[in-house]
Length: 186
Image (spheres, rainbow, N blue to C red):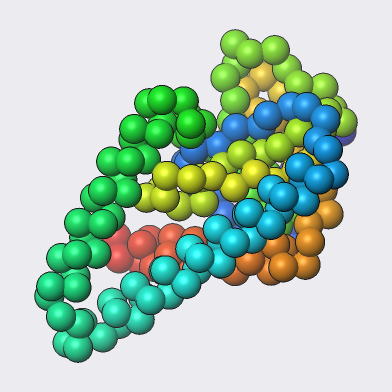
């Protein structure tokens, strides 16, 4: 498949988010039990992330009622999680940050041009860090649709309904945050 056709299949008429984050494609055959366990873990992590960010957003909307002590504790927790994330990345537990464009259908990610290309149809897991401050990753099973030096297109395998919904909500929050950030910098 051509890169243009892969872009069309993955990103046309669907919510898309593009940014730089820890992500890598891990080629290899995926056992059904492993894929199911990864999907359950990803759904739980995205749900917990949504809950945590929802609480923060509610607090941010009503700063007058938020105690400054709670804000300081949240700030310290953010710092600790950020430091833990750096340690995890340094120890090889998190993939290196890369340019990533993703939707509920799949992802396009930049890869190291020095690595051997991955053949179309190769199965594997897309491992990515859903939030910069979170020192954990989700793994989404999929297969390579197309590749070129320095880029790879991965179509996700059919996701369980709960995970598909959680991923769509997560992408929406990221998109909304990116739009708000762009407006602030104008």
